[in-house]
Amino acid sequence: MILLDNVTKYYPGDTEPVLDNVTLHIQPKEFVFLVGESGAGKSTLIKMLTREEKPTSGKIMVGGIDYDYLRKRHIPHLRRRIGVVFQDLKLLPNRTVFENVAFALEIVGVSNAEIRRTVPKVLDLVGLADKGDKFPDDLSGGQRQRVAIARSMARQPKILIADEPTGNLDPKISAGIMRLLEEINNFGTTILVTTHDVNIVNQMRRRVVTIQDGKIIGDQKSNGHYYLDAERANIAKRPLATSDYRSTVEEIRAATNSPRSNAHAAAQRQAEAKATAQKPAKPTTPRKRIIQ
Image 1: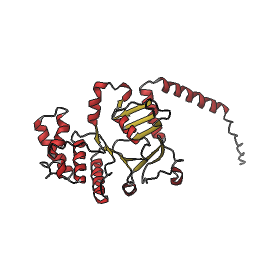
Image 2: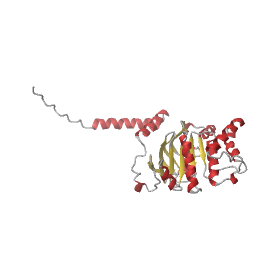
Image 3: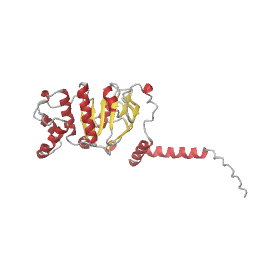
């Protein structure tokens, strides 16, 4: 589960927030596209999830971890739960495909025997079982992207974030990358993809969250399309949260015993009591007497 509750982010010196009161809930095993123009706030949102940045205000929870209580020494443990495919891939040019994927396991202390068992399985998953001894420069753009996905999946994360995974690929290869992400999603991994690729988004018809000027202006829960004009798409007026989602947010606030949640709950109870007291009594219809 990914939860952002009223998250706002200012960078030092900014007069306008990069993220403005963003509330977003992604269920386990969902496949979600995050779309928006450059500068809309997508990258900052991802950095919040990986704890590269902290929010100015608001609450973030990922996989049951409340970021309010996340200490610096726990951040590596958090990042093991989140696989990230970076836009620039960040492959090590002087290491083979096998070694690039293995490196993700080495840095968390996985044994050599486990690495030898795991890496071939992951390479087979992404269709690169025969490329383990190749170097990144020997591969095509689509193959390098698959290596990056394999590396991010090596630790079997519950969440995979792909930042513009098809940005520099032709349509045919892009479609293959998205089929791979769908397959990973079918195994139970939550997928969050940021993209500018209109065709991919419209063909996939998954959930589409649209962000503009730091605000979520649309959340198409299913059969989503890539629309930046929220008014034309008629999505700006759609509710961004269902009652189930809102109850989830309130339950989490209550569980963390935040003063804000207590104050909110008290205010809500007062408002409901006032509304009940002011509600006019429903007129009763006299029963007709039955004559026998």
